[in-house]
Image 1 (cartoon, rainbow, N blue to C red):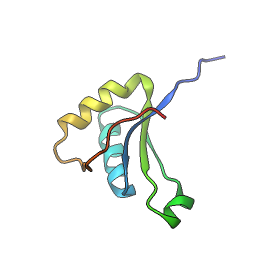
Image 2: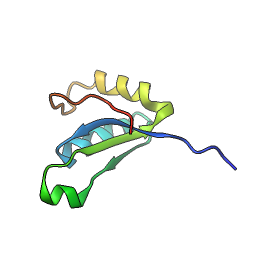
Image 3: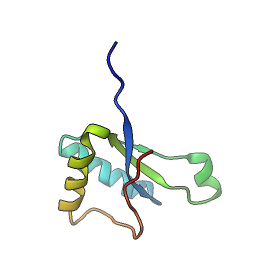
Image 4: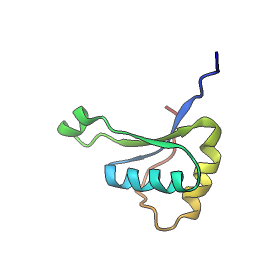
Length: 82
């Protein structure tokens, strides 16, 4: 049996559009990424939309974000582990 890989949160956004832009940039750089949206919570209040990557790709993903000036950024968004 293969070892399961840990998935971590790279960044949180309030906009699913911004999160998907980041996801696309990561995937264009060869980094598998996903977007997690809690649609139930978003219907009631602005729950964060999370961009996730494999833990093994976290540092490279941070570099890609740092090098991409055109990517959306929101104040107070620090990468956190999930």
